[in-house]
Image 1 (tube, rainbow over the protein chains, first blue to last red):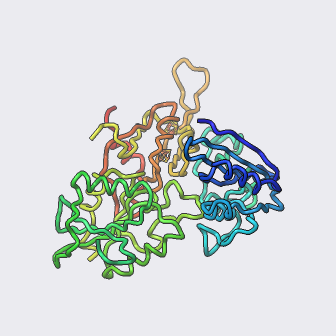
Image 2: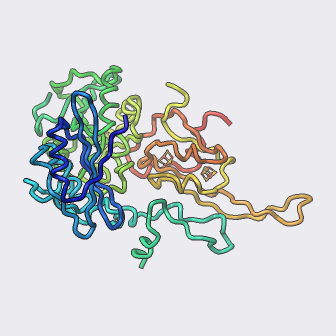
Length: 159
Length: 143
Length: 109
Ligand code: SF4
Ligand code: SF4
C-alpha cells in the first residue's frame, strides 16, 4: 500500500502531526532523515491502527540551522527515533526530553549520515579496486574511485 | 540459564562432542543469533548444560554484530568467565565487522575487545559451520 | 547439504581475465586481484595481443558478506558458490583464501 505523502513547512511540523494524531493516526511507525544537500529532510510515518492507513509527513530544515520541534510530546515513541536522527544527521530537536546520542555515546564525532562526512574506515583502508591492470605499462587512463565516495575524499587524505 | 552479566549467557553442549560446553552470549546480535538457534533446533547444540562438569571444555560463542554501545556488555560477560576461556567468533560481524566494516557505530570484530581463539566466517555461517568450527578449536593451545 | 549452499566462493582461475569488476563491486572491499600484462603473439596476427595474466586472486572470508555480487557481475563466470563449511581459522589471516585455495573449492571444471 502506498502511503499518502504530505510536505509541510518546518513551522507546521508539530501541528500537522498533532492534527493527524487527533484524526486517529496515533501510531508513529518511523521518524528519520535524508540529507538533501543544503537541506535535511525529516520524514515521519504515522499509522491509523484500525484501517492500517499510513501517512508520510515530511519537512525540510536548512543544513546550517537543522532545528525542528520534537514530536515526543505527541508520540513518546519518537524519542529514540529523534535521538538517532539527531546523532546521524546533526539535527536538533527542540524540546526533546533526553537528547543524548543514541548509538555513539562516548564519541559522537561528525554526523555520519551526512553525505559530506567521511567514514574513517573508507579512508584508512586502501580500496583494492584502485589497481588498474588494463593500463599496466600504458600509464593510468582514468582514476578509479570506490562507489559512493566523493572525488575529493582521497585527495583530502592522501597528503 | 546461567546467572551472569545480566543473565545474558545460555549454556549448550556440542552434540558431536558433549564434553564441549558452549556458552552463547545471547545478546540478540543480529541474524547470526538465528543460525545459533537453528543449530539448537537441528540438535547440533543441546540445551542441557547449565551444570558444568569438571572435565568440560567451556567456550564462549559471540555471534553477530557487536556495536560500540554493546561492547561493554560483551566485555562484562568475558570478565565473569574463568580466565583463558576460549572465545569463538561466529560470523563476519563478530569477526571483523563484516558488512558493517565501514560503519561508525560497529566494533570491527570482537577481537578488538578480547583475543579470539577461533573465527568462523560466513554471513551468516551455517549451523554446520558452527559445529565444524567448534570441533576445530585448538583446545590444547587455549588451555 | 545443497550443492549451491553458500559455504564459500570458488574461483576458476583459467576463466578469470583479471578485469577487476568483482573487486570494484564488492561492498566489503574483500577481494584482491593482482595481475600483469603480457604480449602474446598469435600465428597469422599482425601484432601481438596484450593479455592480463592473473598473479594472485584472494578473498577475505573474514569480511565477505556472502552477497554473491562478485559471482553475479563476473562476465566470465569465473566465480561460483561451493558448499564448504569447514573453513574456520584460529588466525584471522587464515580467513584470506588465495588463488590455489579458492580454486580448490570448485565443484567442476
Ligand atoms: S560475496 Fe559479496 S562480499 Fe563476498 S567477495 Fe563476493 S562481492 Fe565481496
Ligand atoms: S569479475 Fe571475474 S574475470 Fe573479472 S577479475 Fe573478477 S573473477 Fe576475474
